[in-house]
Image (cartoon, rainbow, N blue to C red; front, side, top):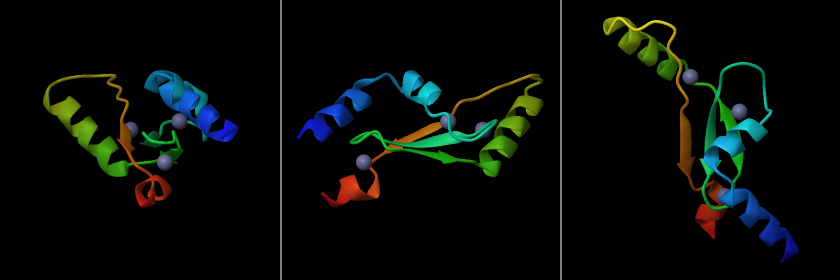
Length: 80
Ligand SMILES: [Zn+2]
Ligand SMILES: [Zn+2]
Ligand SMILES: [Zn+2]
């Protein structure tokens, strides 16, 4: 029960804070975040990198950045 309360407090933290706390891996990456339990998985997405680069170039943008986090329910929460 105590464990569950702890998980809830993590879930209530703003997504941005969650991102800063990730600390996983060096450099650019994205996250898969479970909105039920707050489980965060670090992912890389070459397709997204290529797409954003192309969109930026097509529109004459330079030095662009992006932040893509995917929210959903993890496998164990979905099975509950
Ligand atoms: Zn991260
Ligand atoms: Zn979950
Ligand atoms: Zn990216």
